[in-house]
Amino acid sequence: MKMIIMAGGSGSRLWPLSRTHFPKQFLKLSGMDKSIFQMTIERCLLMGQLEDIYIVTSRDYMHLVRGQIEELGKSLSKEQILLEPEAKNTLPAIMYAVQAIRKKGDDICAVFASDHIIDEPKLLANTILGARELASKGFVCFGITPSNPEPGYGYIKPGDAAPGGFVISEFKEKPNLETAEIYVKNGYLWNSGIFIFDSKQFYEAVEKYNPEVYEAFKSDNVEEKFKKTPSISVDYGLIEKMESVYCVPFNIDWNDVGNFTTFYDRYHTKRDDNGNVYFNDEIMIDSDNNLVYSEGEKAVAMIGVSDIVVVDQKDALLVCRRDESQRVKDAVDILKKNNDPRADYHLTVYKPWGSYTILEDNSFYKVKRLTVLSGKRLSYQMHYHRNEHWIVVAGTAIVIIDDVEKMVRSGESIYIKAGEKHRLINSGSLLLEVIEVQNGQYLGEDDIVRFEDDYER
Image (cartoon, rainbow, N blue to C red; front, side, top):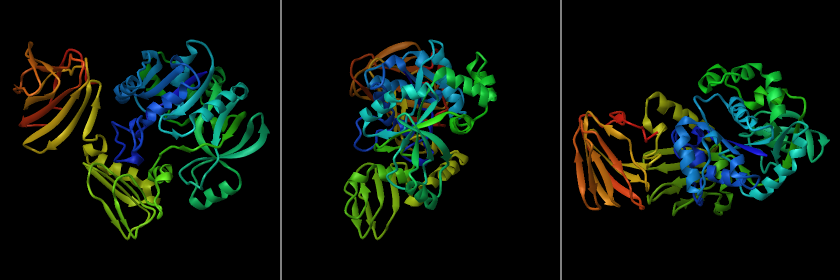
């Protein structure tokens, strides 16, 4: 069986934890030693080998995908990491993966979102492996027994019995709360977004039910495929049109962490006697059913409030009612409209060579902490409008300035003038930590000219 992991989503409803260039699937939330994406990889390895995994993601996330796989001590081939030139929803993304899989022969394929948290991975794996025979007869979805009437999920209406499950009578889109309560009482299941199918049958179904996508993917050029294909979900574009669609139910603790309401549900074991969920030493006075996620050592007190979400990060603060958490995306849209980088970036930005964290930023100077991984290097670059002063605080740096190589040890520093070509290299076995102080006429991230290979992308 082949496994397809969808890892291209932006997770804007979980802002400010999730940002455009570091979305929720790559986060390590409180109590996690692995990211949600890494846990998805590990679940897939319970069902097959590393070479059976295919990841579809945005080009912007390539270094995050590779970096987090490397953290697990593993690696995937270029053919297994499929980069979308633009987001066109789930049907084109799955079609892209199925095409890659069929180059080596047809097989049963399982599709997973990279941003779901599942606490019983072995039960999930056994259930999916047990449904492979049913998948040879038609498309198989997996339904979750609801723990509560959740308006944020789609629902599956059961129909006639089938081996190990049932025929799906109808798909129901995200309902209001009152309708969700009716669905739960009538035995409907949450649509998990996990499904399996035969790759040949999938290809034939796309040709029959969505010829526009099928025709677009006849092109040999990836850019052309995505330019021509319509943007459409696999649910609307395929599954809901097919005749033989089955559902296999399972009763597991599953959460898509799609907004702060489901985030609150995810951490139900952390609720205090008044239903508050928090992670540090927050003070709760006459307050109940609140969610507080605070970064750093800031003291947070909640007094006389109920059903509130507070997410506090160094550069952003979210306060909203829990039942309004779906509207967080609206705030992100406003930030993007205003060209505010806080919609897209955290203060810590991850790169293929490591990361940088903005420590201080104003119109006169900017201070960053650069962390360069062992054996990695930044691109050979030049800035027109700013000077840079690098202070090595851990490790040993190799610095190239205008083709002259210098070694800078811990406690030493080096100055790079505007207009000088320069590169930072960590050739040692330990992490390299550098404090970078910028000053000049312009301190924007676009004040850069790169030479040779672009190692930052």
